[in-house]
Length: 183
Image (cartoon, rainbow, N blue to C red):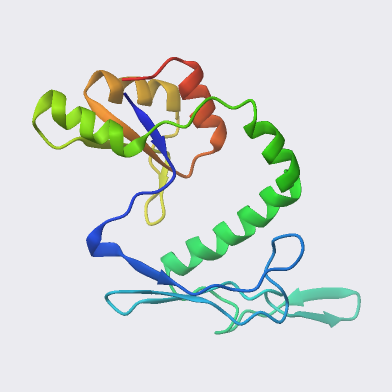
């Protein structure tokens, strides 16, 4: 059965995340200590500063100065910082109480690990996790005429056991599931 998943892990890419305090709305508290993600190879990814770049006023104009403390140092840090903003915006758009209400009517979650095992049992070769990917952090848009359902159906037809996404939306998962992509 084809599965949808938000993330996968690998023994070689384990990371350690330090927790940060959160305010009432789920956004980081202003006085929370900065968290970092440190990979095995020593790359440190700082959490986005709560306030962002400081604002400066000159007459009627306001501008923001970027400096070492409020500018991402690498592409991974930029992704983490952008995802932090995206999650905050999603929480504002769909508060937790509304999300919990929707879960009562949601279809059952698909078992990612079971799909990988079932694929291996059927074929005796390692299962394929196919990526529905519109863009790459380093290369930008990869496919202008992006149709996630068409891509997922092609992956399913060619033996993919599970799907993962990059630069997508939860709407893609819903459209793929509604299109009947199962195997």
